[in-house]
Image 1 (cartoon, rainbow, N blue to C red):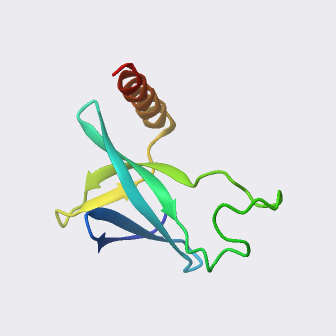
Image 2: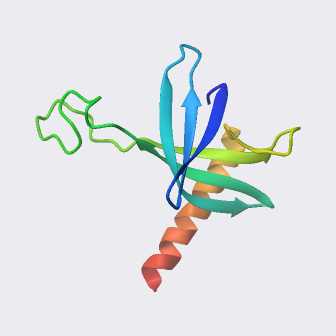
Length: 110
């Protein structure tokens, strides 16, 4: 993940700012919290400024990557008592993915 994380308020949404080692900033919206084994994990969806993209969102040129920018991050409390997003281990990621799939299956049954 990134070195620096900052929480931003955007109405009711929780937006997380990640800064990489080159100083580039990336923004993600917390889509949902997935509890697994007493830990909390966030499903984060990338927020992109259409002006930053050459073609913009929903471009049908055939050259643009239509994959959604989604991350899973573990939420931990740092030494200052503030929540931080960190990269989960491969094992944690697999458990979160399994829990997410179960949630999706349950919601489809309703």
